[in-house]
Image (cartoon, rainbow, N blue to C red; front, side, top):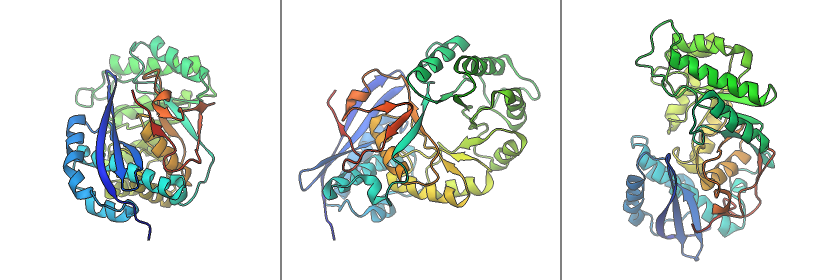
Length: 362
């Protein structure tokens, strides 16, 4: 049996922008190897880092090849997002360590690859500071000029499920629609366009909004209503012509199982940073495959979570497309070695060991 034991764990925070930082996890092994994972966006980076520090004594001496045992022991469903994010970052790093020890890419340990490259969509929301329709359209146009063939926006900033009136499209909703139309007019009909609603609508209003957008042929409508009512989500799915995507806020197998069986969705969005790392992501993808649902991981993340998602999705038959946090910082690609390289909206699946990248100093 292969053994490779953890000797130390540390965290590194990289400041990014007004939307938050990236938090990385480094795991050291007894053969001198150092691996990397990402634990960003756990709602409180300081708390996530503290949880990692608290868990470290229990992990010293842990054999990194025991992936199932790691999940069973350290990933209880009842914990919150900060804890799950901490564990997910460590778990990603164990796959990186195991791959380096065996001189194999992580996808090889997950069943081998189904594809040589991963299609990305550019999420322009975080980079769009100027929130006018023209501001959205300019960034969408720039992302397309860089080779992306799919764009996602979140245009309903000022809409709230608690204050929208029944039966009417408010000025905030109309502004969101104008932003979407400006993007479509700018990028043309051949570029895929996704709309993230951030669960801001009730069923009646989102059905109206979807009908207003019918002629734009959206790739999907994401998180149209809150997930606390799966019957409402199913109603929206049955009442609109556009595919429905959701699930970024779910973290457990049981939660995804309920969604897949009751919610009538077309795409699910598990996040490698929150669902228990690569093994959790792979298990959720298998649940979706059984229901003929496609997997498109939530990934408004740094380059390490992207690398982890690429490794896992290379091995997933029902993968559709991966989120990419476009335009946040101009030094992103150089934060890893070899540099992140996106060509015509795709990122190649690397054949290097583990996750295939090393974290550079900044």
